[in-house]
Length: 304
Image (cartoon, rainbow, N blue to C red; front, side, top):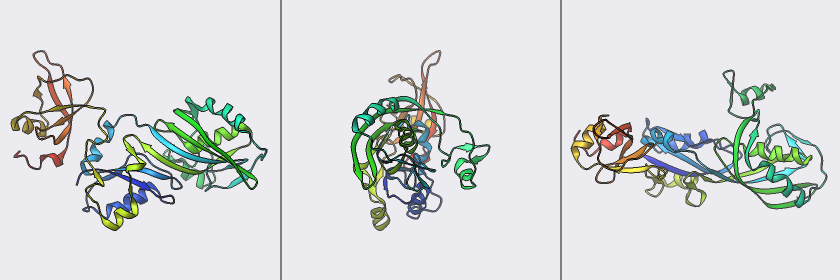
């Protein structure tokens, strides 16, 4: 089985916990990977690549991600979320106007310092490993891109204020750090109390499969998305003969008289089976279609 599974990850599990569960539904040596880690406390879209899909991850392009996040004002957390040690800071009430004035400063290309409780490497160790030892090291700020940042709600429960925001961002953004930095700019402090990922590239929450349903019912046809599901941004080319397919599946290049394209292209059989990813390279006499990633599962059904 080859393809993508769009999981609605429940809170309280790591991304690798999900993979360990899903792995039980496939033959032992099946390769499974995820398309971006989702923090244990977070829920929502967690796309998984199965079989040949793991060989396509480098061609997915820049993935935009969307989140609904809640943050508590007036306190900070050593993990920047509700799972850490909470320390009260400043509980003065923030008006909606104050918050709306601050948000534009966090839209566009901004700098973030990776949190200590993250998987970023420092001298061969993960930052979270150092943090668990009580160590804190200097981290280099990184540029991230916030495409949209919207205040959905500002409420007060007991002594704390809570803001609910919608975030659309590029890969590599830490939403809990965004909440922490917004709190710092307000002067009250803040930590993320809830996070739901609603989109990750081509995958959305409204088409995600429940992990409980999959574990209870097994992988159904609607759960396994096709190999080209997240590749719609690439041009497509179609081979015309079995001879061309044989050459390509063995890594050979073929003369190409079809459309020309810059960058990678999806290569299909005449029957619309995805065979791999390639490039159309100019040649002195005629262009050549050269494969750079051949999908082993595509060889099934062809006499190679």
